Length: 307
Image 1: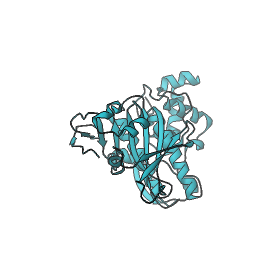
Image 2: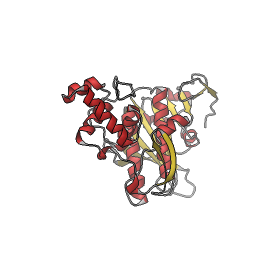
Image 3: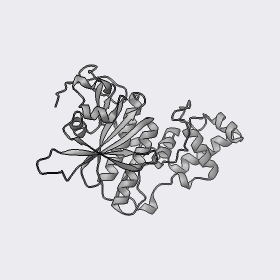
Image 4: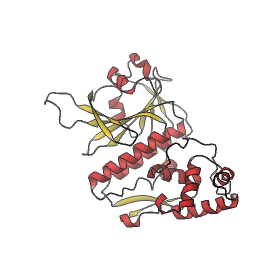
């Protein structure tokens, strides 16, 4: 495996470590997200299913949907650790599963050697690995088999607990290199899902209340209110907030007064226990209820209900 020299590069949110200053393929090791970003997503991905197996599939499915939307992923792949090699002497490997738009997993029948670069690097990280220029794989930092999987698009790879205790790898082929804030937020989602998947089913939770992180044991029926607990009109407002519309634009779309939009947002904040439009968007993304066809980014970046 190629040895990579890593040097720190300044970054406002992620503080990415770059493989060789501006490395040949632009391969960056993104560290764990900051405590602030982690706290922002601390109450997401609560599983609703009863059995551990169903919880695992539910949490993973919601995570993949969030990442596909947040990063505008063109292709999502799960590399599942192969716990039963073909022979005792066969090298460790991953089986390749394609994730369709509905979140379904499909075995492609392909396998990747677990030693293929940069998979060992990804498996060793608490954060993730961002590859900006995979088409320059011949420079030695990406194995040809991994390039064949990812294609010429930028990619983000991160580890995630598998269904049987092993560490799988998520591989997202992206339309464009994500900004630092997007990468940090995506990895915070992965870390939160990892926390849920690694803990006792239905027991220990970390959740937000009024912007404060709390810890405790919560029963399923005592979970914080979600999107489905909102009124039909409040759900419409949430969908338009997720689309990036400002209050005036929401009012025009729904043919209501702007002050009524502010009234609805106040109720939405109270019901969801959040303090900002950003937290509303995170909740909607995590619950997988963003309406198909809504744009990934919008022009609104105000957090106050009155903006």
